[in-house]
Image (cartoon, rainbow, N blue to C red; front, top):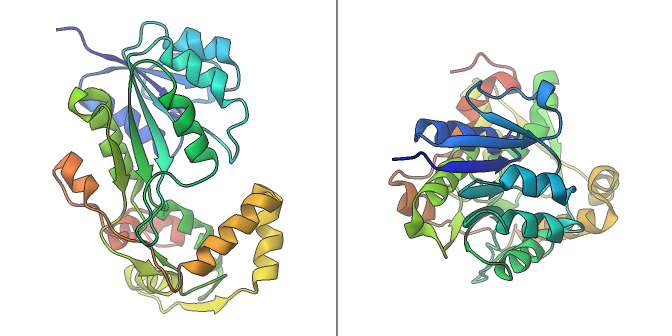
Length: 285
């Protein structure tokens, strides 16, 4: 039986590289779309296709002959995504897109913005698709690592915000199964961690893993807005801060979709911290 050919975009990123590893472990032929092949730290058995998601011609070339593709769209805008989506779906039979979920109240569907915009683009294309709608990445708390290495105080806006943060390995596990098993076609999975934790709780858990007492200091929203605007733009920064502010009274919910798809429970935030302890300043576990 011929091994499936799977194209992975974002293959050198935090989730994408784990998708590559999982596909290789499952016997797939993996092709990675990368901008700079010489600088790509991928396993030697991965086929490298040079290109860029913003260059549809290179996307179509990379997808030629592939059975399925994993899409991780970069940035906070869907501008330029339509040609890339069309290039992918014009070649592959099945597309798995790493999206983002609405997790407050009884809200469902993709998070408004780039994620819902790209899902709409994909829904207009031929072939089948699976949406992996992620909760907040546990890896986003690595932004505290520099503060933790330097001292015992972590400054952040809205420490009472309740998040159901997800381990990137769980996202990759769901994506790999969705890429290889046709039973997942047509589904939209909501992938969260197993527990809702406030940011205070998250810092406490980091301290417990590191065996150090850590404290939280609330950051003025105006200061946070200024910092966020520098790297995500004013509009996205404003929407992000408003969302985090609302999570104190209406925290994110937890789902069991990861266990449903993979057969194992979602990894805890404490497990994620242990996996990244070195970045926070401790010897890896």
